Length: 288
Image 1 (cartoon, rainbow, N blue to C red):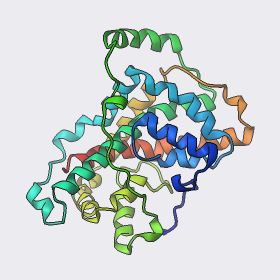
Image 2 (image 1 turned 90 degrees about the vertical axis):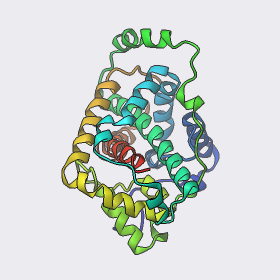
Image 3 (image 1 turned 180 degrees about the vertical axis):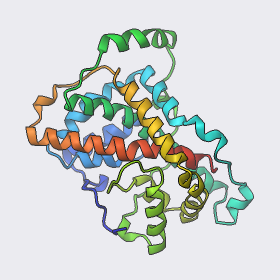
Image 4 (image 1 turned 135 degrees about the vertical axis):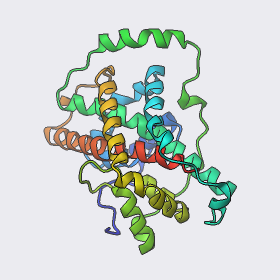
């Protein structure tokens, strides 16, 4: 693995002015302590992050969207495939109760953000590709569930995020940690990609957990279980996204070059990275 991050992105610490405000809006709306790589990457394409965020932000206020994302993040097929580790065994690799709580919170934050990003960005990508979304069909389908849930607090408001931790640069990690991240990043892949999931970099704060996940999840990876769940998750997400309502301005507001680059990026992230990390995050949650 190369030590430098192969995907262009504007780090949260480097964001200023309107971009810093946009990053803060993303963190506040999702109620997570970080800005996912996909948003930081879109910020490198002129005009694309403001357009994309305006197009998808209203979805995050919809209870039906929240429920669909929560169901997607669950990946129930993993329940019978992955056993939790003994707490006593985890202490032997320096993962005491406080460390386990911090890892659990981080995995929950990423699971929350990734499932929602997958649905929202599939919908945004379809708009960039010229796809039609049936607003009336979605409204009719979700009206009953939303009306029945009147007054309920959406998960984005009710959840408690974990602590904000710095995102280690790949060039700051040891060769052993880089190797483990490289292997983990290959798990569940259904297409070649240069994208290195930020979750693994964040989990480098606990290299013992990365080593554990790399070892325990090797069998379901080898058996094709993880890739099969990624394909299933992506198929489910595409079906849901196809029925999401449209918001924001038409994509022709973007310059043709930016629109083409945005469509390619969204297709790559949703099809090769975010769908995979929904499954991998759920798999790692089951280890604790």
